Amino acid sequence: MQKKRLKRKSETEWWIEPTGPMRVPGVIYGTEDLIEGMDDKVHEQVCNVAALPGIQKASYAMPDAHWGYGFPIGGVAAFDPNEGGVISAGGVGFDISCGVRTLHSGLVRDDIERVKETLADALYANIPAGVGSRGAISLNHDEMDAMLEGGAQWAVGRGWGRSEDLKSIEEEGCMEGADAKCVSPQAKKRQKDEMGTLGSGNHYLELQEVTDVYDAEAAGAFGLREGDIVISIHCGSRGLGHQIGTEFLKSMAMAAPKHGIKLPDRELACAPIKSELGQQYLGAMRSAMNCAMANRQIITHLVRETFERVLPKAELDLLYDVSHNTCKMEQHVIDGKTKTVFVHRKGATRSFGPGLPDIPEAFRSIGQPVLIGGTMGTASYVLCGTDRTMGLSFGSAVHGAGRQMSRRQATKKWKGRAVIDELANRGILIRSPSQRGVAEEAPGAYKDVSRVVEAAHQAGLARKVARVEPIVCVKG
DNA sequence: ATGTCC
Image 1: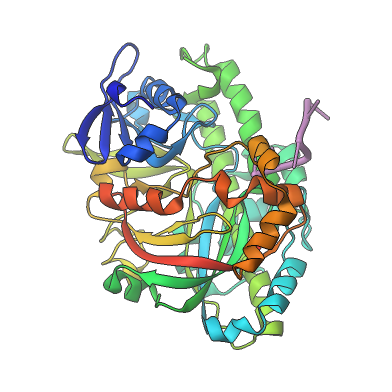
Image 2 (image 1 turned 30 degrees about the horizontal axis):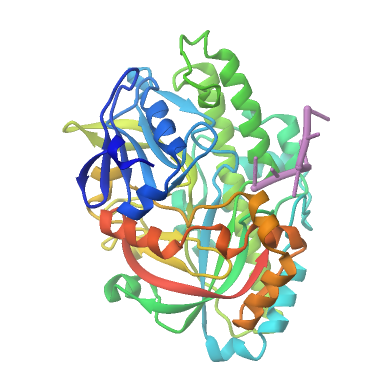
């Protein structure tokens, strides 16, 4: 991205002054090198979002932003329903409520070194991964609706997990306002046999070792120490979320003229929050959020079953579960007034600072855990929300490394087998049904997650707490 | 991301 098109406000804050149809400025967070490396399309998309009705304060892009469908991935935008504010299917993304959850294990490296091959094989055998992967669970019509409206609370009620898990999930595992009647039969059909499955692409399940602690107080509150082994699960709402996204993009684009909305780009399809279509999307999107939280909850149960057989002394308490493709109704202070707005976070993690009631009591005085997934061969990070986050980005931060190379480019450059062998030489075990999938996800196809995290930390979007490195990775 | 093109 050309820096001359931006006005630099600080080391890590870059503004686009409103021109033409833009109702608010654009704000891009990032260090100089990340800004220079960003696609010009991010600039264009930030401006497009700034032109949507009812947008508040600014159209934001996080340091890991890249070109997405309509909205940039790494985009954050809030809309006021009382000012004609809209909700956009492309502003949430196709993989609705894709997110990361991290479990403690109560183990250290020495506990798993001897059995890591066995663990890798057992996790791969018990947690279905890959395109179209099917789980052991099949939902009938009534159970599907109960899942869509109950989320992780539904899963725990059916025996997949522990009731104490729920306090460590955003929304305590159940998104209010989900309405299964807003979800099409086709979306439900696609999801019927996909509960408890990882899916493909950048989704994974990893055993990780805490290699660095940057903030002793926050790490203490989160229960993380150097040398600890943790388990992270990265996945979303599978076929259901994708189907909902596809259907509503189409209907929102078709209904835009009727709603008096002129779209600068068809991909920005949206509907007024107060319209019938907007409300239907909210009911469906929240159902997909519940689906994703239930999915990660069931996978958690499968992980516990696997450890029970291979390494029964593991404790597997849930640290936290965050989503990074959402739209949520939240209270924010805008121009000195508290307003209820709908915050789109597409490839952006909620990053609430200390004191907010939605944060589990155990870390309410610290800020919420912000779980940032890296790539297979590199590292992931745990951060926490700060006092400044609300004012900077409606309480949002980065979500991961972000691609720097297309899937196609990646498969030309790498072979899956070679990537697996190279990582094995470094002590990282990969298990995947797809060689091509591994090539597409080669570490080199992504930006350096450490630079992205450093930029988020510098910008005040979140504070670095700990770094983890992968040991075993089950890939989709 | 995705029954990787209804």
